[in-house]
Length: 127
Image 1 (tube, rainbow, N blue to C red):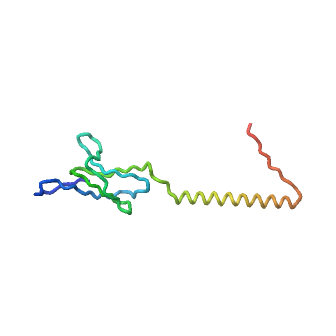
Image 2 (tube, one colour):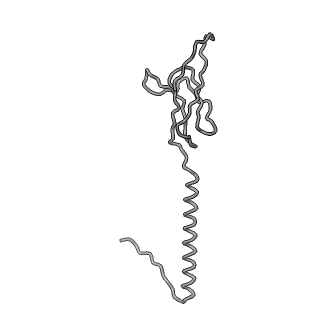
């Protein structure tokens, strides 16, 4: 985003607020830095810029900078938390499979005991 300042008689530069709309919604653990493109160094810099707020919907970031140039909000997603919903679904499925297997084995064992026959399970070692 680029910003410009109209002629003012104040005699000093007012800090400019930049409202940056995200292309994708942020997730918990994502880090945002308010930066500008430093043409002399050919890289992003955060000098003179700071994060003011991030909307509760995590779709907009408000940055404040003390100069006018090209602004951006850089996203660091390396700390992003995994989706708890998927973790819960996998945990519940594994729990159901484990309990069902145990009940099946208990039922099968009690049935074989009532017939008077015995089954032995042996572990065969790998060569």
